[in-house]
Length: 406
Ligand SMILES: [Zn+2]
Image (cartoon, rainbow, N blue to C red; front, side):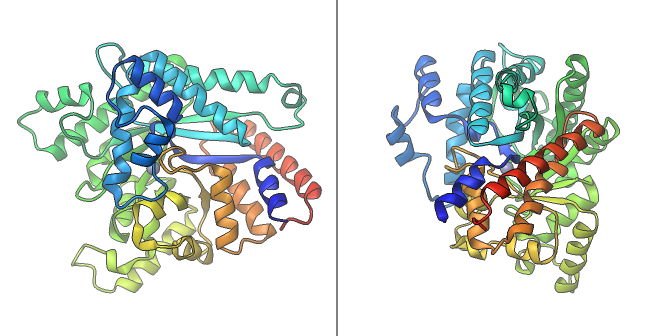
Protein backbone atom coordinates (compact mmCIF):
# COMPACT_ATOMS: atom_id res chain seq x y z
CA UNK A 1 0.00 0.00 0.00
CA UNK A 2 2.75 2.41 1.01
CA UNK A 3 4.70 1.87 -2.19
CA UNK A 4 1.59 2.40 -4.24
CA UNK A 5 0.90 5.67 -2.49
CA UNK A 6 4.47 6.82 -3.10
CA UNK A 7 4.15 5.82 -6.75
CA UNK A 8 0.82 7.60 -7.06
CA UNK A 9 2.27 10.80 -5.59
CA UNK A 10 5.31 10.68 -7.83
CA UNK A 11 3.09 10.18 -10.89
CA UNK A 12 0.50 12.90 -10.31
CA UNK A 13 1.19 16.34 -11.80
CA UNK A 14 2.58 18.52 -9.02
CA UNK A 15 3.49 22.15 -8.48
CA UNK A 16 6.13 23.84 -6.36
CA UNK A 17 5.42 27.51 -5.72
CA UNK A 18 8.15 28.14 -3.16
CA UNK A 19 11.60 26.92 -4.06
CA UNK A 20 14.93 28.74 -4.08
CA UNK A 21 17.23 28.18 -7.03
CA UNK A 22 20.47 28.48 -5.05
CA UNK A 23 19.24 26.14 -2.30
CA UNK A 24 18.41 23.53 -4.92
CA UNK A 25 21.73 23.24 -6.78
CA UNK A 26 22.92 19.67 -7.43
CA UNK A 27 25.77 18.94 -5.00
CA UNK A 28 27.83 17.31 -7.80
CA UNK A 29 27.46 20.50 -9.83
CA UNK A 30 28.46 22.70 -6.91
CA UNK A 31 31.63 20.66 -6.49
CA UNK A 32 32.46 20.71 -10.19
CA UNK A 33 31.85 24.46 -10.62
CA UNK A 34 33.71 25.32 -7.41
CA UNK A 35 36.73 23.23 -8.39
CA UNK A 36 36.84 24.83 -11.82
CA UNK A 37 36.76 28.38 -10.40
CA UNK A 38 39.03 27.44 -7.47
CA UNK A 39 36.34 28.34 -4.92
CA UNK A 40 36.77 27.07 -1.37
CA UNK A 41 34.47 24.28 -0.12
CA UNK A 42 34.90 22.42 3.18
CA UNK A 43 34.88 19.17 1.17
CA UNK A 44 34.97 18.29 -2.52
CA UNK A 45 32.97 15.07 -2.24
CA UNK A 46 29.19 14.62 -2.04
CA UNK A 47 29.56 12.55 1.15
CA UNK A 48 31.80 15.19 2.72
CA UNK A 49 29.44 18.05 1.93
CA UNK A 50 26.47 16.02 3.15
CA UNK A 51 28.24 15.50 6.43
CA UNK A 52 29.49 19.04 6.92
CA UNK A 53 26.99 21.33 5.18
CA UNK A 54 23.83 19.76 3.75
CA UNK A 55 22.59 17.93 6.82
CA UNK A 56 19.38 16.08 7.60
CA UNK A 57 18.98 18.14 10.76
CA UNK A 58 20.29 21.61 11.55
CA UNK A 59 20.84 23.08 14.99
CA UNK A 60 19.58 26.51 14.01
CA UNK A 61 18.82 28.88 11.14
CA UNK A 62 22.45 30.09 11.00
CA UNK A 63 23.69 26.56 10.35
CA UNK A 64 20.97 26.11 7.73
CA UNK A 65 22.06 29.30 5.98
CA UNK A 66 25.74 28.23 5.85
CA UNK A 67 25.13 26.30 2.65
CA UNK A 68 23.92 29.37 0.76
CA UNK A 69 27.20 31.18 1.38
CA UNK A 70 29.07 28.34 -0.34
CA UNK A 71 26.67 28.11 -3.28
CA UNK A 72 26.44 31.79 -4.24
CA UNK A 73 30.09 32.09 -5.47
CA UNK A 74 29.37 29.30 -7.98
CA UNK A 75 26.49 31.33 -9.45
CA UNK A 76 28.44 34.31 -10.78
CA UNK A 77 28.67 33.55 -14.52
CA UNK A 78 25.99 33.25 -17.22
CA UNK A 79 27.11 29.69 -18.06
CA UNK A 80 26.86 28.53 -14.46
CA UNK A 81 23.48 30.17 -13.90
CA UNK A 82 22.13 28.57 -17.08
CA UNK A 83 23.42 25.13 -16.16
CA UNK A 84 22.13 25.28 -12.56
CA UNK A 85 18.70 26.42 -13.79
CA UNK A 86 18.59 23.75 -16.49
CA UNK A 87 19.44 21.00 -14.01
CA UNK A 88 16.93 22.42 -11.53
CA UNK A 89 14.14 22.15 -14.10
CA UNK A 90 15.27 18.63 -15.11
CA UNK A 91 15.19 17.50 -11.46
CA UNK A 92 11.67 18.85 -11.08
CA UNK A 93 10.50 17.21 -14.28
CA UNK A 94 12.06 13.89 -13.20
CA UNK A 95 9.82 13.72 -10.12
CA UNK A 96 6.68 14.80 -11.95
CA UNK A 97 6.58 18.49 -11.08
CA UNK A 98 4.61 20.02 -13.95
CA UNK A 99 4.73 23.61 -12.81
CA UNK A 100 7.41 25.34 -10.76
CA UNK A 101 7.91 28.89 -9.63
CA UNK A 102 11.57 29.27 -8.86
CA UNK A 103 12.82 32.23 -6.87
CA UNK A 104 16.20 33.83 -6.39
CA UNK A 105 17.77 37.19 -5.58
CA UNK A 106 19.31 38.67 -8.76
CA UNK A 107 21.34 41.16 -6.69
CA UNK A 108 23.43 38.27 -5.32
CA UNK A 109 24.64 37.45 -8.83
CA UNK A 110 25.39 40.80 -10.43
CA UNK A 111 29.11 41.47 -10.97
CA UNK A 112 31.53 42.80 -13.61
CA UNK A 113 30.72 39.85 -15.87
CA UNK A 114 26.94 39.96 -15.74
CA UNK A 115 24.38 42.70 -15.31
CA UNK A 116 20.79 42.11 -14.21
CA UNK A 117 19.62 41.47 -17.78
CA UNK A 118 22.21 38.72 -18.21
CA UNK A 119 21.44 37.18 -14.80
CA UNK A 120 17.73 36.88 -15.55
CA UNK A 121 18.25 35.84 -19.17
CA UNK A 122 20.70 33.08 -18.14
CA UNK A 123 18.33 31.61 -15.57
CA UNK A 124 15.50 31.76 -18.08
CA UNK A 125 17.64 30.11 -20.79
CA UNK A 126 18.32 27.11 -18.56
CA UNK A 127 14.70 26.70 -17.50
CA UNK A 128 13.39 27.19 -21.01
CA UNK A 129 15.81 24.65 -22.48
CA UNK A 130 14.55 21.95 -20.12
CA UNK A 131 10.95 23.00 -20.81
CA UNK A 132 11.35 22.81 -24.60
CA UNK A 133 13.03 19.40 -24.39
CA UNK A 134 10.28 17.96 -22.21
CA UNK A 135 7.38 19.52 -24.08
CA UNK A 136 8.61 17.95 -27.35
CA UNK A 137 7.66 14.50 -26.09
CA UNK A 138 4.78 12.89 -28.01
CA UNK A 139 2.71 12.28 -24.84
CA UNK A 140 2.97 15.97 -23.98
CA UNK A 141 2.24 17.15 -27.51
CA UNK A 142 -0.85 14.94 -27.61
CA UNK A 143 -1.87 16.41 -24.22
CA UNK A 144 -1.94 12.96 -22.60
CA UNK A 145 0.32 14.39 -19.90
CA UNK A 146 0.39 18.09 -19.02
CA UNK A 147 3.25 20.20 -20.30
CA UNK A 148 5.99 21.53 -18.04
CA UNK A 149 5.93 25.24 -17.37
CA UNK A 150 7.55 27.68 -14.96
CA UNK A 151 7.56 31.22 -13.63
CA UNK A 152 10.44 33.20 -12.13
CA UNK A 153 10.02 35.03 -8.81
CA UNK A 154 12.58 37.71 -8.00
CA UNK A 155 13.55 38.23 -4.37
CA UNK A 156 14.73 41.47 -2.82
CA UNK A 157 17.00 41.03 0.19
CA UNK A 158 15.50 42.30 3.43
CA UNK A 159 18.97 42.42 4.94
CA UNK A 160 22.50 42.47 3.60
CA UNK A 161 25.97 43.31 4.73
CA UNK A 162 29.48 43.40 3.24
CA UNK A 163 30.37 40.20 1.42
CA UNK A 164 26.88 39.21 0.20
CA UNK A 165 27.81 40.04 -3.40
CA UNK A 166 29.94 42.39 -5.50
CA UNK A 167 26.88 44.40 -6.41
CA UNK A 168 25.57 44.78 -2.85
CA UNK A 169 29.06 45.72 -1.62
CA UNK A 170 28.99 48.50 -4.18
CA UNK A 171 25.53 49.60 -2.98
CA UNK A 172 26.73 49.79 0.63
CA UNK A 173 29.79 51.82 -0.31
CA UNK A 174 27.75 54.20 -2.45
CA UNK A 175 25.23 54.94 0.30
CA UNK A 176 27.55 55.28 3.28
CA UNK A 177 25.53 58.16 4.74
CA UNK A 178 22.23 56.29 4.82
CA UNK A 179 21.09 53.83 7.47
CA UNK A 180 20.62 50.20 6.44
CA UNK A 181 16.80 50.41 6.41
CA UNK A 182 16.93 53.20 3.83
CA UNK A 183 19.53 51.36 1.75
CA UNK A 184 17.46 48.16 1.78
CA UNK A 185 14.35 50.12 0.73
CA UNK A 186 16.13 51.86 -2.17
CA UNK A 187 17.77 48.62 -3.32
CA UNK A 188 14.48 46.76 -3.27
CA UNK A 189 12.79 49.50 -5.30
CA UNK A 190 15.67 49.55 -7.76
CA UNK A 191 15.41 45.78 -8.18
CA UNK A 192 11.71 45.70 -8.92
CA UNK A 193 12.03 48.51 -11.47
CA UNK A 194 14.87 46.70 -13.21
CA UNK A 195 12.99 43.39 -13.21
CA UNK A 196 9.87 44.93 -14.73
CA UNK A 197 12.07 46.44 -17.47
CA UNK A 198 13.82 43.14 -18.17
CA UNK A 199 10.50 41.28 -18.15
CA UNK A 200 9.01 43.63 -20.72
CA UNK A 201 12.15 44.02 -22.86
CA UNK A 202 12.70 40.28 -23.39
CA UNK A 203 9.20 38.98 -22.66
CA UNK A 204 10.47 36.79 -19.80
CA UNK A 205 8.13 34.91 -17.43
CA UNK A 206 9.16 36.99 -14.40
CA UNK A 207 5.90 36.62 -12.55
CA UNK A 208 6.30 37.87 -9.00
CA UNK A 209 8.20 39.79 -6.37
CA UNK A 210 9.28 38.43 -2.97
CA UNK A 211 11.37 39.33 0.08
CA UNK A 212 14.06 36.92 1.24
CA UNK A 213 16.62 36.92 4.03
CA UNK A 214 16.46 37.16 7.79
CA UNK A 215 13.07 38.43 8.95
CA UNK A 216 13.94 39.42 12.52
CA UNK A 217 14.70 43.18 12.73
CA UNK A 218 14.05 43.53 8.97
CA UNK A 219 10.32 44.28 8.78
CA UNK A 220 8.35 44.18 5.52
CA UNK A 221 7.30 47.83 5.78
CA UNK A 222 10.63 49.02 4.31
CA UNK A 223 9.60 47.41 1.02
CA UNK A 224 6.23 49.12 0.69
CA UNK A 225 7.26 51.30 -2.25
CA UNK A 226 8.83 48.38 -4.09
CA UNK A 227 5.67 46.27 -3.65
CA UNK A 228 3.49 49.16 -4.72
CA UNK A 229 5.55 49.55 -7.89
CA UNK A 230 5.37 45.79 -8.56
CA UNK A 231 1.60 45.87 -8.04
CA UNK A 232 1.14 48.77 -10.46
CA UNK A 233 3.17 46.90 -13.05
CA UNK A 234 1.10 43.70 -12.91
CA UNK A 235 3.70 41.74 -11.04
CA UNK A 236 2.25 39.18 -8.59
CA UNK A 237 3.23 39.44 -4.94
CA UNK A 238 4.41 36.96 -2.36
CA UNK A 239 6.42 37.51 0.80
CA UNK A 240 8.35 35.41 3.31
CA UNK A 241 6.56 36.07 6.60
CA UNK A 242 6.16 34.17 9.84
CA UNK A 243 9.10 31.86 9.20
CA UNK A 244 11.08 33.30 12.10
CA UNK A 245 8.81 36.13 13.31
CA UNK A 246 5.36 36.19 14.84
CA UNK A 247 1.78 37.04 13.82
CA UNK A 248 2.38 40.81 14.08
CA UNK A 249 4.96 40.63 11.28
CA UNK A 250 2.54 38.56 9.16
CA UNK A 251 -0.04 41.25 9.90
CA UNK A 252 2.40 43.94 8.77
CA UNK A 253 3.24 42.00 5.61
CA UNK A 254 -0.41 41.57 4.60
CA UNK A 255 -1.53 45.09 5.49
CA UNK A 256 1.46 46.94 4.03
CA UNK A 257 2.42 44.81 1.01
CA UNK A 258 -0.89 43.14 0.03
CA UNK A 259 0.67 39.82 -1.02
CA UNK A 260 -1.41 37.17 -2.77
CA UNK A 261 0.66 34.47 -1.11
CA UNK A 262 2.74 34.16 2.07
CA UNK A 263 5.93 32.13 2.31
CA UNK A 264 5.79 29.85 5.39
CA UNK A 265 3.39 31.69 7.74
CA UNK A 266 4.51 29.12 10.28
CA UNK A 267 3.97 31.33 13.34
CA UNK A 268 0.52 32.57 12.28
CA UNK A 269 -1.19 31.00 15.30
CA UNK A 270 1.60 31.62 17.84
CA UNK A 271 0.46 34.28 20.29
CA UNK A 272 3.66 33.99 22.30
CA UNK A 273 5.61 35.15 19.27
CA UNK A 274 3.80 38.49 19.08
CA UNK A 275 6.59 41.01 19.69
CA UNK A 276 4.56 44.24 19.67
CA UNK A 277 3.75 45.12 23.34
CA UNK A 278 0.86 47.34 22.18
CA UNK A 279 -1.15 44.27 21.11
CA UNK A 280 -3.26 43.30 24.12
CA UNK A 281 -6.08 40.90 23.18
CA UNK A 282 -3.76 38.40 21.53
CA UNK A 283 -6.30 35.61 20.89
CA UNK A 284 -8.72 38.02 19.26
CA UNK A 285 -5.90 39.59 17.23
CA UNK A 286 -4.87 36.20 15.84
CA UNK A 287 -8.47 35.19 15.21
CA UNK A 288 -9.04 38.32 13.10
CA UNK A 289 -5.75 37.93 11.25
CA UNK A 290 -6.52 34.30 10.39
CA UNK A 291 -10.01 35.32 9.23
CA UNK A 292 -8.51 38.03 7.03
CA UNK A 293 -6.10 35.58 5.41
CA UNK A 294 -8.76 32.88 5.02
CA UNK A 295 -11.36 35.21 3.55
CA UNK A 296 -9.01 36.72 0.96
CA UNK A 297 -7.67 33.25 0.03
CA UNK A 298 -4.14 34.51 0.65
CA UNK A 299 -2.25 31.29 0.00
CA UNK A 300 0.28 29.94 2.47
CA UNK A 301 3.31 28.30 0.86
CA UNK A 302 3.93 25.56 3.43
CA UNK A 303 7.45 24.10 3.68
CA UNK A 304 7.31 21.30 6.26
CA UNK A 305 10.85 19.89 6.21
CA UNK A 306 12.49 23.28 5.97
CA UNK A 307 10.54 24.55 9.00
CA UNK A 308 11.40 21.45 10.98
CA UNK A 309 15.07 22.03 10.18
CA UNK A 310 15.22 25.74 11.01
CA UNK A 311 12.80 25.68 13.96
CA UNK A 312 14.05 22.72 16.01
CA UNK A 313 11.42 23.40 18.72
CA UNK A 314 8.77 21.89 16.39
CA UNK A 315 10.44 18.52 17.10
CA UNK A 316 7.94 16.49 15.02
CA UNK A 317 6.14 17.29 11.76
CA UNK A 318 2.84 16.57 13.53
CA UNK A 319 3.37 19.71 15.63
CA UNK A 320 3.62 21.94 12.57
CA UNK A 321 0.96 24.66 12.32
CA UNK A 322 -0.18 23.15 8.99
CA UNK A 323 -2.81 21.23 11.03
CA UNK A 324 -4.24 24.56 12.26
CA UNK A 325 -4.11 25.99 8.74
CA UNK A 326 -6.16 23.03 7.47
CA UNK A 327 -8.63 23.38 10.34
CA UNK A 328 -9.05 27.09 9.60
CA UNK A 329 -9.70 26.30 5.91
CA UNK A 330 -6.80 28.44 4.77
CA UNK A 331 -5.63 28.24 1.18
CA UNK A 332 -2.37 26.26 1.33
CA UNK A 333 0.09 24.62 -1.00
CA UNK A 334 2.94 22.24 -0.17
CA UNK A 335 6.39 23.41 -1.27
CA UNK A 336 10.02 22.38 -0.83
CA UNK A 337 11.79 25.71 -0.06
CA UNK A 338 15.22 24.22 -0.91
CA UNK A 339 15.63 20.87 -2.61
CA UNK A 340 19.31 20.45 -1.72
CA UNK A 341 19.67 22.32 1.55
CA UNK A 342 16.51 20.70 2.93
CA UNK A 343 17.32 17.37 1.21
CA UNK A 344 13.80 17.05 -0.11
CA UNK A 345 11.53 17.17 -3.14
CA UNK A 346 7.82 17.72 -3.75
CA UNK A 347 7.00 14.01 -3.59
CA UNK A 348 8.63 13.70 -0.16
CA UNK A 349 6.86 16.81 1.15
CA UNK A 350 3.47 15.57 -0.03
CA UNK A 351 4.10 12.18 1.57
CA UNK A 352 4.90 13.94 4.84
CA UNK A 353 1.71 15.99 4.56
CA UNK A 354 -0.44 12.92 3.89
CA UNK A 355 1.14 10.80 6.62
CA UNK A 356 1.09 13.42 9.37
CA UNK A 357 -2.08 15.42 8.79
CA UNK A 358 -4.75 12.83 7.92
CA UNK A 359 -5.39 14.13 4.44
CA UNK A 360 -8.20 12.21 2.82
CA UNK A 361 -8.80 11.74 -0.89
CA UNK A 362 -10.68 14.99 -1.38
CA UNK A 363 -8.42 17.20 0.69
CA UNK A 364 -5.34 15.85 -1.12
CA UNK A 365 -6.88 16.62 -4.48
CA UNK A 366 -7.85 20.12 -3.33
CA UNK A 367 -4.31 20.69 -2.07
CA UNK A 368 -2.74 19.57 -5.36
CA UNK A 369 -5.11 21.55 -7.58
CA UNK A 370 -4.79 24.60 -5.36
CA UNK A 371 -1.07 24.73 -6.18
CA UNK A 372 -1.97 25.27 -9.83
CA UNK A 373 -4.91 27.59 -9.15
CA UNK A 374 -2.92 29.88 -6.89
CA UNK A 375 0.10 29.88 -9.16
CA UNK A 376 1.24 33.02 -10.95
CA UNK A 377 0.98 31.21 -14.27
CA UNK A 378 2.75 33.28 -16.95
CA UNK A 379 0.22 32.68 -19.76
CA UNK A 380 -3.20 34.28 -20.22
CA UNK A 381 -6.03 33.51 -17.80
CA UNK A 382 -7.67 31.36 -20.43
CA UNK A 383 -4.45 29.37 -20.89
CA UNK A 384 -4.19 28.97 -17.13
CA UNK A 385 -7.73 27.59 -16.92
CA UNK A 386 -7.00 25.21 -19.77
CA UNK A 387 -3.82 24.05 -18.02
CA UNK A 388 -5.71 23.45 -14.75
CA UNK A 389 -8.32 21.45 -16.68
CA UNK A 390 -5.54 19.23 -18.08
CA UNK A 391 -4.01 18.81 -14.61
CA UNK A 392 -7.39 17.80 -13.17
CA UNK A 393 -8.00 15.32 -15.98
CA UNK A 394 -4.57 13.71 -15.50
CA UNK A 395 -5.10 13.61 -11.74
CA UNK A 396 -8.53 11.95 -12.08
CA UNK A 397 -7.09 9.43 -14.55
CA UNK A 398 -4.35 8.48 -12.08
CA UNK A 399 -6.80 8.24 -9.17
CA UNK A 400 -8.64 5.56 -11.16
CA UNK A 401 -5.34 3.74 -11.80
CA UNK A 402 -4.43 3.81 -8.12
CA UNK A 403 -7.93 3.58 -6.68
CA UNK A 404 -6.91 1.83 -3.46
CA UNK A 405 -4.04 4.00 -2.26
CA UNK A 406 -5.86 6.57 -0.14
ZN1 LIG B 1 11.99 30.43 1.23
